[in-house]
Picture: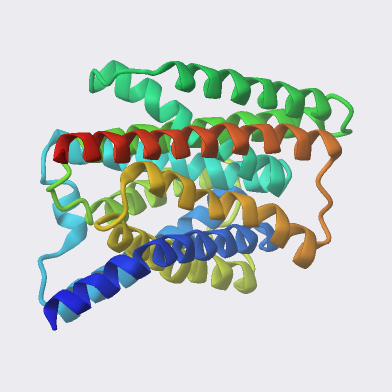
Amino acid sequence: MKTTRTSRVVTLAPLMALTAGVLWSFGTVLARVADRSDAFQYLTWRSLGIIVIVEAWALLAGKPQSTLRAFTSGRRMMAANVALLLASIGFVYAVKTTSAANAAFLGATTPLFGVAVARVFLGERIFLRTYVAISMAFAGLAIMLLGDLHVGDFADNVVGDLAALASAAGFAFYAAIVRSAPDRDWSPVLPGYGVMMIVICSAVTIADGKTLVPPAADIGLAILHGSVFIVGGTLVFNSASRHVPAAAMTVFAQTELVLVPVWAYLLLSERPTATTLLGGSIIVVAVVGMAVLDTRQQVTTEVLTAA
């Protein structure tokens, strides 16, 4: 009975990973719809939604307070908080200032930043295929940036593009930190980076002379984004990661980045430019191709070891 149940969970794990990407993609659309608040106002309320739902869950489950543990669990936990903070600020700022497609496709470079971080901090080997994938990604990035040269709000678009790349780097650092201690409970990071986000974004908002209370509709969208789509997607993804190889998870994670431009087109009538589609497609092919090859090598190695 237990074996059958475990087998069913393993079978459903890839679907769970894909579902996480779908949840995250809808959250990105909400950030785009909330157009009467800037990135910092939006992130303040989104973070509040994350903290409330995580702490409520901990209370119901009889677990220790997660937010406090985020700041009392050592330097590595703090580093994870900062990395996820950079990732979240960068991505939402990108969604608010450049096109949804640009933000999504440039965010897809996370695994490529990841191999560089893993090489420097974890001493992991970089294969030839990884260098090829990185070169392809840079080519795709160049095409997208060249396309922005012909857009009226060029400066905003480029800053948004750079913010998306900073987000990808932040997620890569976060992944490397988590990978350095895979058996550790990293759940406090969600409310931990949320508190830091509230402090920083509130300070920026006040310094800009703006209100901390944007229109109620935008507040509702931000809280929904944090409490349902961020927390829900992360919980589903973490559950799936226990049964799916890390390289395969990289492929499944691209669901979000592929769907964001689709939802932007269907729900917001936002048409990506030809250069965005071309450059973004090159980036996705590079990332997914690298992940597929990594998975094949991992399977081959396990078979040879078993033999």
